[in-house]
Length: 426
Image (cartoon, rainbow, N blue to C red; front, top):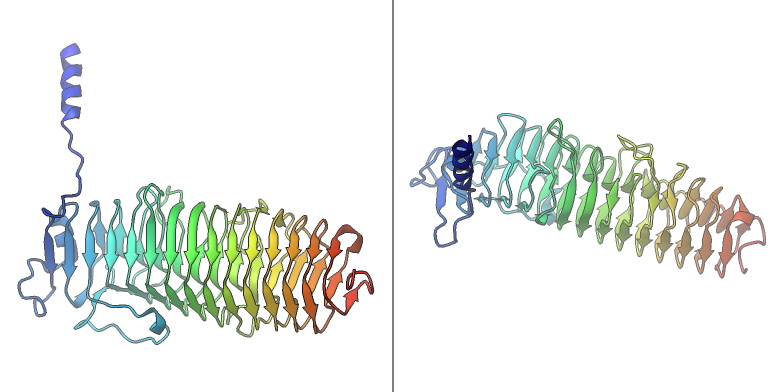
């Protein structure tokens, strides 16, 4: 028994974990389905090249249409196609060209499945699958850049990560996917569906059925930065987030979002967010929906814990059919948070509206002019402080409080108020 145990220990010590090769030893593998553009290609399928590769290798894929689902199981691989994305032209939809693009259609439910660390995917058109690109929260350090994900029945990208290494998704065009351009959601049964330590920046989304960038659903988000993305005419929302910690939605631009659903929002916030920052976004409405909407009940699953410590600041919100900034009547919803230095004007509803259950927040230094309902409306919310806000030329009231004794109003600039004479000039 002792000898057998010793033999097992020695054998275990000889197991070799694959490591990325030094750059000088890494290979480049060339793929061309018909060998027209690249006659010297050694492989006619992407999967065959992946199978023959070693960690650290680069797989260059020449133009053609590849009807396969590529399963990337080795670490530190770089897969490069010839497609160049101009994010500013994402809404100018043109068909992919197999003489110019590497088009991966996905023979199964995905075009690419990334199931190891530090995999890079760049320069592809992924279309016609359930998901264009799938990831796993068992791994991390993904780089997904300069791709077009279009016309997939569910998602362009399903983004998960363990967070050990930062994952970055940038400069992609995500358009006309059935559900979302990008979604952080469970794909495999038993997978927690978590996303941690991720940077999502400089992507363009257009015409997706529900959301442009959706960080909600089963699972948890931690330290996710969503910055400088553009959403045009996505169905329900531009960016959504729930069940997060230490994350941010900043400097994004939405146009005409949402155009299809009056219940939607350019930025859609569910429950159980802690320390979420929503700042510096420019949100221009279509005919329906809200600018920034905080609600729990429209998310599945619904996380019913309150949103705590949120910083909603420096956003410009104009032209929505609903309210510019709306915290709906969930109990509790928004608490111990700050809404400051926003411009929320020219909306058909109120500039800022806090319904019942949105208590003990500070609302300060906002400009809410020329809205179709009220400038700032404390709709039965309590324990809030409203200070140094500018409200003028609103159709209903500049300032309205349905539970006036339970909130504090200080140094606000306005003309009309309800109850009359209790807010403006006080």
